[in-house]
Amino acid sequence: MSVATATPADFKPEEKRVIFASSLGTVFEWYDFYLYATLAPFFAALFFPKGNDTAALLSAFATYAAGFLVRPFGALVFGRIGDIVGRKYTFLITIIFMGAATFAVGLLPTYESIGWLAPILLVSLRLVQGLALGGEYGGAATYVAEHAAENRRGYDTSWIQTTATLGFFLALMVILGCRVGMDAKDFVEWGWRIPFLVSLILLLFSVYIRLKLNESPVFLKIKSEGATSKAPLTESFGNWENGKIVLLALLGATAGQGVVWYTGQFYALFFLIITLKLDYQSAYILIAISLVIGTPFFIFFGWLSDKIGRKGIIMAGCLLAILTYFPLFKALTHYVNPQLEEATAKTPIVVSAADCNFHIFVGPWSRFSDCDKAKDFLTKQGISFKSVPAIEGKSVSVKIGDVQIDGWDQPKYAATLKAAGFPPSADKAQVNWFMTELILVIMVIYVTMVYGPIAAFLVELFPARIRYTSMSLPYHIGNGWFGGMLPLLATAMVAASGDIYYGLWYPIVVASMTLVIGTLFLKETRNQKLRVDL
Image 1 (spheres, helix red, strand yellow):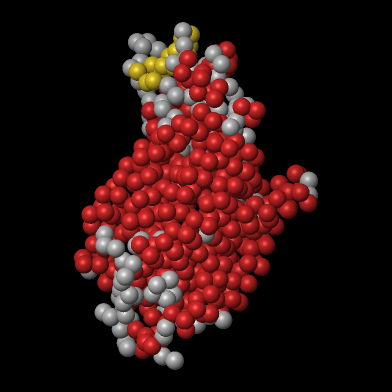
Image 2 (tube, rainbow, N blue to C red):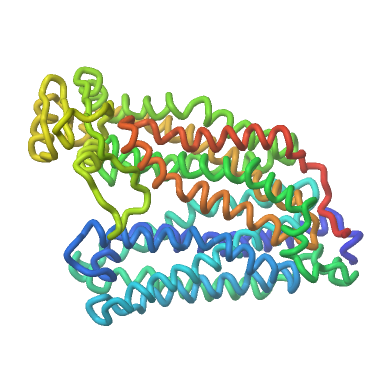
């Protein structure tokens, strides 16, 4: 049977193997993602100097962020290889790099053993992982799409989009098993290594499965015709006709998709824990349930995109997010911490100061004024406040109801807030669990709308000879930079403005940009066959 005469029925068994093998690698990607995020507090104490716990924790999270920032560069490196050498072998290389780096983290000596070399090695391994991740998704999406029947491409690629949930649960189960099986001291000393070392099993299984796969039929065809690209980077980004589509894919699709994805899952989680003061266990359970309920909708919207088109579903998800994020997050406050809502309405808070700074990347270079300390404290209590010019002769003054406190005085702030009825934590007896879960599920549905069809949409935008390179870069910038920076930027915006909901303007503005640009300038791709021409 030749590739040119293959029918959808011919591809069906191969499609199943391709979906399984490709998705397995993406599960591994998310396993690593959630593993490091969950264990970052342990890394802060083990891999960075003691003496300043906050600085150590921020350094651990900065190391985590390094993997995000380097992903587009991985897209360029491995995208080029994928368009020249082939899809199968390229994302086989990425999973080996990613698995080896993850395994190596479990073998690292700590700061106490080798000093500053420990965090240097840790950052280096995170950079290797980030580069590998940059090549993994584009390879998996391209490979699955090029095997899929023309009328099932959205459905087939949507399976890849479900794997974040599987990776999350896998990481949690491995960590939970370790923590239940040993005491806390042993886990801090050596038990945290086990989840990273276990990744070797995933790596070997993934490599074994992928080695049994055949190369993409589309790539084989263009290779047999001598039509592969000799310079995919130049053709993708040096050629304005294609470069324009790359830019439109970023601004008109993946940027909005990225911020909706991170708002509906990560920012919602942080909002529950940090702003609304819900305990960690309850917050994680709520988010986990919303992911379980929402996951089948990735498949549904992928399938639906085969029937009615990709672009409309993605744009509808962005539009719903734009219109409803403010009321949804305000409803979360109402149903999770009604005491906080009531206290905020009864007791206005005003911060009078002049020497205030906008902090994003915090480090040894950062200077925190009394204004910054006061605003940071109030923000971490989940409290909204109004900022006004400084009172002459005073660095900062905080007025809580009728009580005015001059200068930075955290104990007095805390005592006054408690007397005014601001709760130190959410009262679980007052949480409306059903309504809270419903709101979280709605936001995850938005995630599935923008994310379910995106792989097929991106693949169909570009010709086969430069598809891997062209689709990977806008995806990883949209998700890694626009989306990955959301929690950090939104938190900084909240602290600067004094409004606990102000950070939502970031995803709303980005999603609005995507809605306008995507609607006006991006074409629908559902009926486009995967091109093998020049």
